[in-house]
Image (cartoon, rainbow, N blue to C red):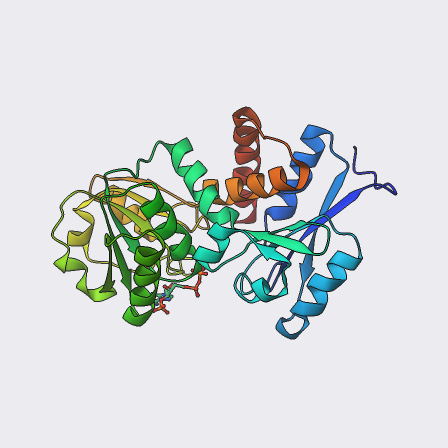
Length: 292
Ligand code: ATR
């Protein structure tokens, strides 16, 4: 499409605050170019008190789809025509798809995390999983781990009340009792020795690259694989600690990539193949390096 905008060009975008450093425009505009789709994706900076007007205005402006990011993934739910069951159970919507009377909300973070893990060869089934955090990202991770039949999920959070609420809601949603909430500092009470860890707190995010939510090297002895939801820096302190104790580590860039791809698939009713996903992964990796 060579960046030409026509009368029929589909418009999609991102709603959040802040959004200055987002990679989503690159993901979607490159996908549109690659697949020859007449679509343009733009960032929209929205203030909290303007969210209702922004969503309704977007609908009136015939915008095809929106991504929703921090801090609106929960707040946006009340303004939607319909919400997909999974997004409702997770309590967070990051993708809006235009329907007849309003937008339908989905959560592509969870499926994005899953497709990223498949691509990296990380298994969930039968694993003991330690999730660090109980915020939005941790919710998507917890839902995925229970759905994909982890044998046990420890949910560790600084504010243990949040971990308890999340563990209860996951156990309730799946009619199970495998999710155990814990205080973050009680990590040394986990009896299992070979665990998959998912780092879903904001600790270690650039520019605070020298911190990890758990610094104790003994903790990492039990982690055979560590996945950090953070992708900037490329190698987080958490990942370094996993590597130092002999485990394998991965960052969150594939989750970001696939949540975008799944949103794009919703908006365009297409399937993006793995060759295109790998090509795009290289592009966004390069872009991130240039930003550093
Ligand atoms: P997100 O949607 O990105 O997950 P969030 O909902 O604000 O963001 O959650 C951030 C997570 O990082 C929470 O689990 C938070 O712990 P609390 O619930 O106890 O606040 C965690 N977090 C942030 N800073 C932290 C710190 N310095 N130490 C430990 N955990 C921290």
